[in-house]
Image (cartoon, rainbow over all chains, first blue to last red; front, side, top):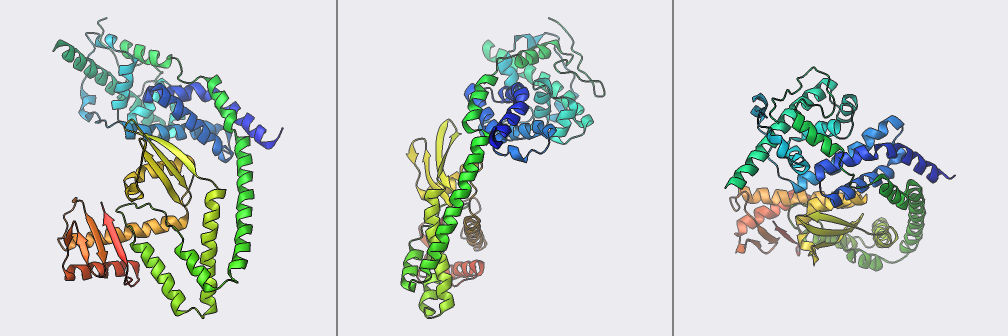
Length: 176
Length: 288
């Protein structure tokens, strides 16, 4: 087995267990299937190109997701012009007494997640959908574990409010 | 379902998709179990096409090419150093600059300036052996550039931009071609694609040569200095678009000929920024 094959084998061994986590991270933020495929492919190929720089196997997770985050953020910045949520929204209690969220679907979840500021969006997606532990997110984003927890709690509150807002807006349009 | 959700509070142990809000959990669970846009098997099919082994072989191939270029360079250097100064002069004037301008567009000024400066060196000191050797080295670089373009290859990067496809063909010496939604972009308008060029450079792994970066940086610095001068002289308002042509004989800003005094001030700025005397037949064109 030559050196290239050995590296290839090592890469696959490290990448395969992370494939689903990577795709889920990208697809919930990008949504468009073809774009997701492109970005995942780009990420993997970029990761392979510089694979010899990864000295420790434990670092591969951070290495791979750092590339993915960069590519996703570039895409979002180029495609989306979103207005961050008002911070005071966090002070308001969650009201789902009418069960309004029942009527929402995954596409609207995607839109609502995109409306979140980046510092809340990334930890939320990594934790809820990509199977990252608090410790892993802390390592990836170089933020303390307590900081990550705070952001997650806030992100969840903001996401609920955002989803409610989207639904009310949709209902208002339908009524008119 | 009527329900008052209880969002988890800071300090509690967090668990994925257990927010305390049943509906939000449902949506998150749906997203977490959605079919993958690209399966593991598909990805594995993609990987062997350019696996690290291939990349390694490409890398080895690059070393062979680099060695060949260096060897060619040494041979050319040896040959060119024996040729007379006129041949060298021809080689230098045939060098095509790469047309990428970061801020405004400078069409001919710096090239003319470089050419003039080189020619004056040759004219004034053609009998000086050390100067001849120096120019021979420049000629060698020109020859190397031409070879490298073909040997190292040019990459094409496709970028999607507002539902349009922008194709950027570049190599380490700069941008060769830009096609925006099927339309060939004039080199004069490359400055409008700086962000895309940067993106293409990153995606293709092509790094612009240091000399090219320096040249672009100098152009940017010069364009900035001239525009600041126009602001200072109240000839231009910030944010206003401009089309400025300056030569020793006249300066035209947005179709209007500037006064002799203004033109001299602009020429002073150019000379101060470049540290060189503005050539008699030099011309600078900036627009934004």
